[in-house]
Length: 87
Image 1 (cartoon, rainbow, N blue to C red):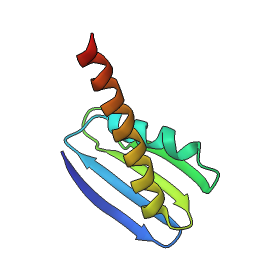
Image 2 (image 1 turned 90 degrees about the vertical axis):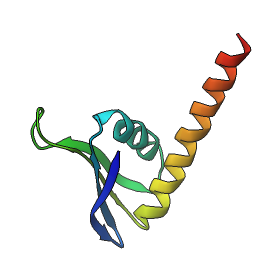
Image 3 (image 1 turned 180 degrees about the vertical axis):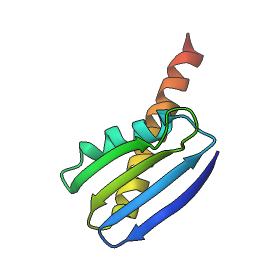
Image 4 (image 1 turned 180 degrees about the horizontal axis):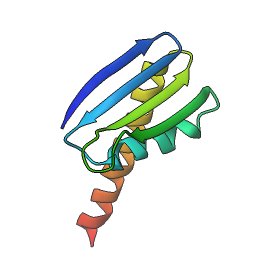
């Protein structure tokens, strides 16, 4: 998977997930929308068959908030893997 930065502004960021489905972008979005500092977070895809998913975030310092959300997702996945290895 490749990540392209489409827009990187002080209050807006758009990331495109190349060769990936919406899953990862949706996981990150779900964390972002729970953050009170995020004005908007959404995932879009221009065309269902050929488009690439894009994560759109409107907030002050969106990059930092996205990184925070990614860390939360990573933590949850590690916890899940740990639980599975115990069974």
